Length: 175
Image (cartoon, rainbow, N blue to C red):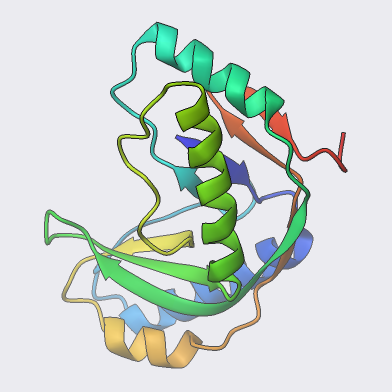
């Protein structure tokens, strides 16, 4: 997984903690909450789900990501949504950035860099970018949570770098 760590952004941490309190309150002790991502240590956005690559391909991927020239940009998390996992037993509750178009344009840049390195991205980015806050069962009042938290301004993160296999990859204007 290539991801950006977000627990160093105080506004995002504060927004996630407020949302967590709302999510807990809406459960009313019913036990439908499976788990939270710890705002202080676990907030992140998965950028790519890289998998099924040989060690040689991973090496080429890292070389391509190191050489990729890209400028930093702000990612503003200012909405709330959910999605049902393929197992149909887990609903993810997450903050959404409003600038999805910019993020998808950046994702195409990454995928293009990998293609030029002769690596096929097996899972090109198709789903919306998000910051998962909680996992709940389908019995949780998901619709009410989404209605309650929609439009919440969680804060902004300047995307200067991301992590893949323990290595940081930086925008040219952030090194």
